[in-house]
Length: 402
Image (cartoon, rainbow, N blue to C red; front, side, top):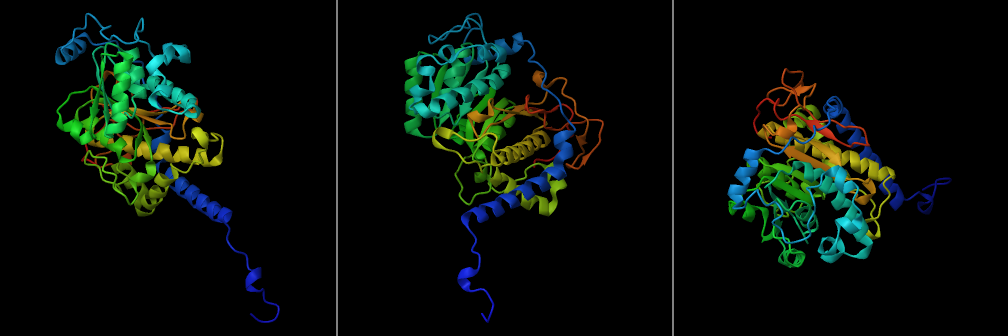
């Protein structure tokens, strides 16, 4: 090394902390690059979803005829009953003891005590997003139902609707079936199989839901819902699987590594931006989670992950809008501390009454190029308190599938 030169032992060696700091810095740069190029889609079109329309009597009669039930007796379930179909404001005033009685408690689904509180918060929040999408006689399917926490709660709140719990794992679906039987809910049933097997059964549904759908299962659920012209409300999870090396066989004809999926994002990001977008997808999973799912909702890592989730789900929403002329909005679970994966994505089919009045400012021209147009649509970041974004289905020019 020569006189006066530092020895090998004196040279600084990279530590684990330094490595993670460099990785975090690169992730932040990728997020900033993507956000800068698509921010006019995320920021110019702030619209709140309109209030739910009154139930359509003709739709209710059609659903009742298809289901072989009568709309005259909505309290057909023999399980826990509610005096009326509660909406978001009503369940907000219900205590955990009222909302999660007996088999409806997540603890009854083989869930540890340290996770029960957070799961209750998740279920309460998801229910507040799903309930406005339901009409009398709605047929609801939950994909990735697991032990049935979400559908059991909703089935007890809406005995006038029918719920199908789709779960691919026999062990878990058996637990769900046991809970359905123990609860006495006659408006809930379990289907053991994949999303492709359920689709091939030709079963009809009006609303598709899912809580923490792993990776491409979210995209498969949204694809099937849009094909069937059904409403959808899902909470995605495991974003990294979208670009991972392993094919988890989620079904629905979706393939990993195709993100960004929307023509709008592809046109705006370019080759450099698309590479950064893959880093954004991985960044959505970078949250330090402790025992029982605890994490720091104020930590910088979580705030970055939240921005990543919003970008990925905005791309999903735009892709569905371009391909199927559907609309919807983005939301969040509340409180944010209930889950590190708290993004809520709602899709509405073309012509859906819930989307009436959603108007955008900046639209997408045919082919996905951003620009102003007479017919407009878009997604946007809303204030953190509301945590919503909207997109109008009725004003989107037809494009080829992304």
